[in-house]
Length: 190
Image (cartoon, rainbow, N blue to C red; front, side, top):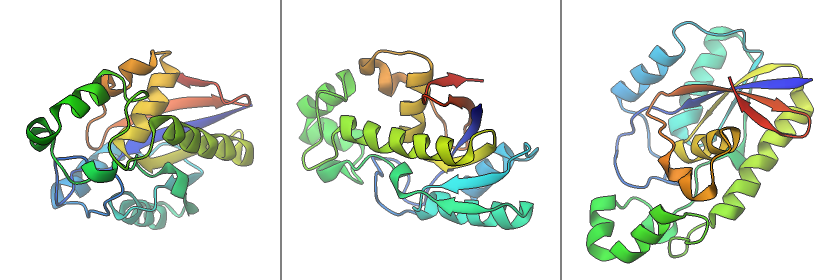
């Protein structure tokens, strides 16, 4: 069987811009509206899974209540931890660490921000969480509310992109994408 996973990225956050990573920012009113618009015509979801960070979890809680669906918080589906780069804009990084930023954009698997989480570890964490969801909820349709990095990672894998193209996957605030997850955790975009 197959798990249908609909991926929803959180909306705009109060502090906006920069690499938010594990910072626990709240949504702006526009961010809430972006997410409401994305699910204006709810699919036949059987449950909601969410990152525990409030920019995802608060909306997941509200939608879970509204649709009377079970909801779980999945810590392994949090955003990549950017270490010393957390909360720093790319414009600021161009001034303070242009070489590091360039290496990260060139291939995030081969360069880790100072004191950050390696993308290979992030990938293992996220893929492990998706595999657990697939094993526990095979045959169901789940709305997963998460972050741009999580979604880029899963979509890049589903699209068969080389690792160095990970950051080229475009996922806007309130973006909604569908994946099928097979028993061997093979991902296909729908």
